Length: 326
Ligand SMILES: [Fe+2]
Figure 1 (cartoon, rainbow, N blue to C red):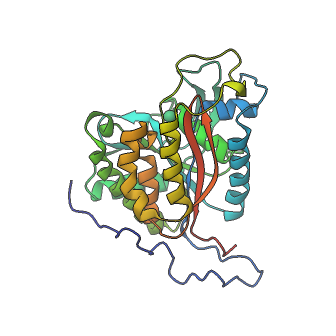
Figure 2: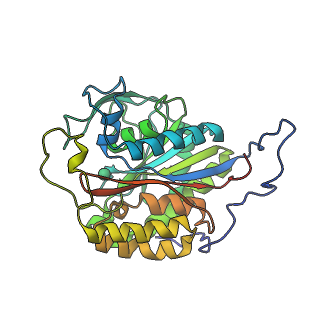
């Protein structure tokens, strides 16, 4: 990998030039500035979408996992207020063995089935890609030394994690999307392969800024990831839902405390340790990519909710770079 531009940890370049947290425009609204507006940690258990009973999904449920779903409901309102041009998402289950791929298909559509839980997620999707930005991210990542590919195969089925996270963030699907693949190196080598996710995050930010997009970046990972391997009757029967073990829970709480306190520098150091201790899905790099795109901002970070899904830890979190300006 070539040498790349690096933002120091805890750097505050995320505060955009000319931006003042107290400089509303004449209408009393925040100025609509280009760049990354916010980052979110947006987990994708299919159970959460299943529990919402949207018309696009075939299976029907009686609900369940309400606290996490209420957090997504809150997040959706806040995203609406941000008025973004695009959602850029990195999720773990579009796995590419060589390099980082970007979906450049203008109008992905099809039927997404969760392979482990086909009784929970059989979802008919259709959305629009911001192709210009998708290509710019791929080009920038290539220039920054990463192996990249522009995926142009119309008809390739979009993975369930991408669909689930995007639905939970914006069920109206009226905001264009850029979808990034998950290079699987960390699963074969070590968490040191997360280095590439730092670069990809920086490349993403540069591409967004070069095109003047107003963007939300979403990393779609669960936290602790050991889980049950047997389903107890009704999937949404919450009497069976709890943390897989105390060890995972404690580590997730340690992780979330750093987010709540805005201690992003320490969080960055904790990510590999948290992976080792809890088999955290952050190993796929989505969280690292997202926080790198944000420039590892110190002093902000909200945990909207934490809950378990089949024993895994899941948190809905927000880093709002314009907080106070709206
Ligand atoms: Fe997953």
